Amino acid sequence: MKYRIPGLAVILFFSLTVQAQLKLNATVADQQQPVAGVTILVHQKTNGDNFQVLTNNKGEFSLPLKKNSAYVLKLSHVGYVTMSLKIETEKTDVNLGILTLQPNTDLLSGVTIKSKKQGVKQKNDTLEFSSSAYKVHQDASAEDLVRKLPGISLEDGAVKSQGEEVKKVTIDGREFFGDDATAALKNLPAEIIDKIQVFDRMSDNAQMTGFDDGNSSKSINIITKAEMRNGRFGRVSAGYGTSKTYNAGGNLSYYSGKQRISLLGLANNVNQQNFSSQDIVGISQSSGKKNKTPKTDAGKNATNFSVGPKSGVNTTTATGVNFADLYAKKIELTASYFYNHTDNNNQETSSRNSFTGGDSLLNYQESRQSVSSGDNHRVNIRATYKVDSSNTIILTSKDHF
Image (cartoon, rainbow, N blue to C red; front, side, top):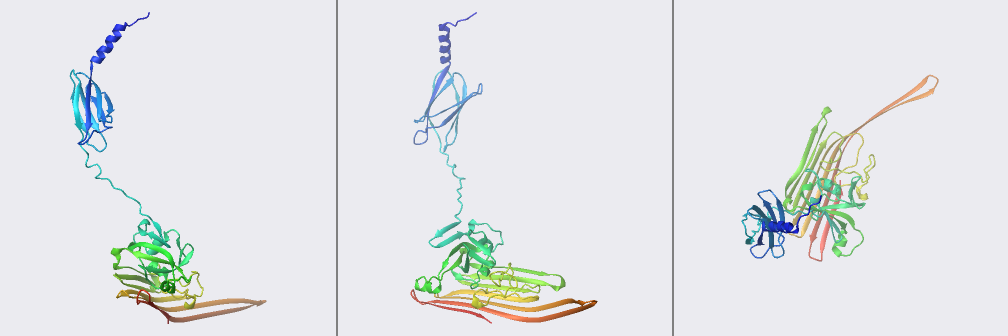
C-alpha cells in the first residue's frame, strides 16, 4: 500500500521549522577596524550541539539559532584574547552590534630565536674557524680543538693544513714558543680561544718590502677571548711508583695585557726525556720514528723544547720558559729558553756459544756498562723594532750550547 503526503502538509512542516528559528547578527572588530577570519564556536547548552562559522572580510557573521534556547559563543583569533558570550534567545532576532576583541600583548613574550654560529668563513686568503662551533671537553688543549677543524690534522708530531706542514703558531699575531708549533698548541687551553686563523705567512723580508719572494709558509694564528687576556692558567701532574720511580711535570702561564710568560717543568727517572702530552710533548724528529738520529739545528728540524732520544735508562730534569712583551708600541720582544739535563745508564750483555766439532763447545760472554750525563741549552730570541711605517728592524737569534 502506498501513502502520499499532501503538498499542503509539506509546506506546513517547513513553515513551522522556519518559524522555530531566528538569526543572530554581529560584527567583530578590534579598537581600530573590523577583523576578518575570526572563528566563532557555538555551543547549545540544551542538547550539547556544536558548530562554528567565520567572519567575512567586513568582520560580520550571522547565526541561525532556535527560539527560547541558551548558547555559549567563543570568539578566537591569532593575536587576540579569546572572548566568551552567553546568549539566551526568545522569539525575535538578536543583533549584538560590534564585538570588540582585545589584543594579546603577551603573545611574543616567550619567543626565543636561536641560530647556529657559522663554524668557518673565508677572509681573503685567510681561513677562519670559530671555536664555539666545535665542542671539546672541559680541560681540552688547543691541540684537541685543532684536531676537530676540517682540513687540519696532526701527523707524526707535525701540524698539517691541507696536507702542508704548519711551520709557525702565533697567539694574537705574536710568537709563542719559537718555531715549535706542536709545543704552542699543547701548552694553550682551548677555553681561552675565540678564533683560529690559517693562512700562508710571508717571510720577514716579504712582509717588510711588500713584495712576495715566494718563501711563504703555512701558519696558524690563535685569537684569544678578550676576557681571557689577563689571567693565569696551567696544570701539574705527579706520580710515584715501585723501585723508587717517579714522574712529575707541569706548566704555568701568566697573561697581563701585552706581556705573556709561560713556565714548564719536568723531572723523572722513567726514561721520559722530553715534556709529556700533559705539559708539552717534545718531538725529537718530524718522522716520529724511534732510534733515529735527530737532525741538527742546521737541518731546521730539531724542535725548540726537546732533545734527541738516548738508549738505556735516563733520569731527566728539564725546564723551559717563554716570554713576550711589547714596549712603547714599537719594540716587540719574544724569547724562549730550554734546559735539559740527562743522566744515562746503559748496560749491555751478550752471550755466544759456538760448536767447534765433536764434544767441544766455545762459550763467549761480554758485559758493558756506560754511565754518562749531558746538558742541553737552547735559546731563541726575536726583537722587532718598528722605526716608522716604511722601516723595520728585526733581530733573531737561535743558539744551542
